[in-house]
Image (cartoon, rainbow, N blue to C red):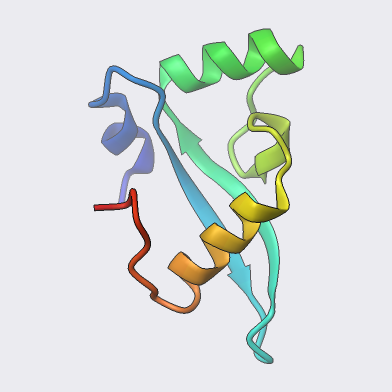
Length: 85
């Protein structure tokens, strides 16, 4: 799937996030696989570095353990979480 094409269709900040899942069920790296122009430009203003695809999420979003847990439960456990629908 072409994630760049997918996210560029959105006007507001949008990105595709990947979560690494280990065989024991734990999670590893959470990365921004792709981001649209709005997300890239905002991240560059806030974090003062150019956006790079597949970089750790905290290079373009604030690092937050609650966010990590939310991503893990959604991506790895398949839990339907409020705000995703």
